Image 1 (cartoon, rainbow, N blue to C red):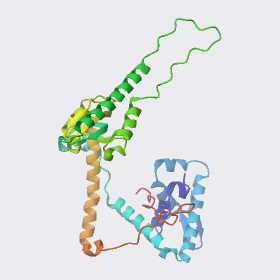
Image 2 (tube, rainbow, N blue to C red):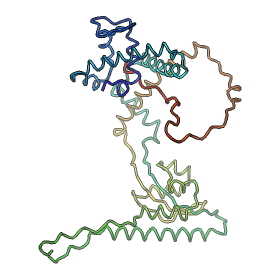
Image 3 (cartoon, rainbow, N blue to C red):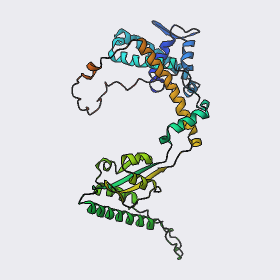
Image 4 (cartoon, rainbow, N blue to C red):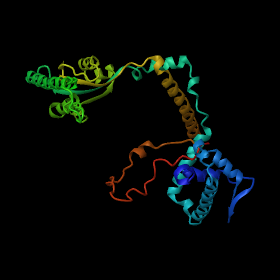
Length: 352
């Protein structure tokens, strides 16, 4: 557990550094230029997660922790001697950890979601209807032709042929799903019972996906297997058409529409997944968590704005937008590629 690199990470060293000068009690370990006291270790350990602290109860783990802290001390001292505190990467990581600790210091205790009132929940529910409306994940096969196009009849015929293939796939799937009549002949002694029939390899979903790849003319959805996304009826009306939206929302999960005629052409849609409308009571705990999280985030947002205002920050946006950069180089392949790249963020610095 308390191996620094695996469990406590960079936070262990910074947490201990934060305790320096405040320790008292028995000296547990010392060396040239440093001492590690009982209070320093106690403060550090009590800042960690319960499961990490629990593992210290195992024999030898406390000693292993102090031994690791000694290593940190002597290696940190050597790193300072070699000037690594001025290393640009060390400075960047240190800045990141310090900002994280600043946020922990100024962020209040998380809001208890259960304290969010019923009135606030109802208001949020009313103001965010799209979050709770019925949604359907659908796929589409499209045949485009304007109303006055001479190809209109040809496109409809192509759509009808595709639909006939899908209806045939539905019939085959239904036949394969029917239970086979039980044999009236008794099995001979010593023989194994008959195996159930294998599931059909030709399913409606695979037939639909195959036709999307072969005949659909909608390049925007074809790249994603014909997917329209997971949308509300209004979103589908806006992205495609009222006719397509009506067809999608009339289907049960797994259902396939007839040919849908629109001003843009002809469509066949399949409902892959259906999420029904979420009631206010069902949504209540999720809304409470959202409001609590937003409230907590706003505290930090307000603090950052206050600090920036006090710093009298000014941006030269024209100069920023005029910046040019060398073309990005292709990623290197092989072991060690990108090893000098900074992580997106430093490891957490422990709980405050």
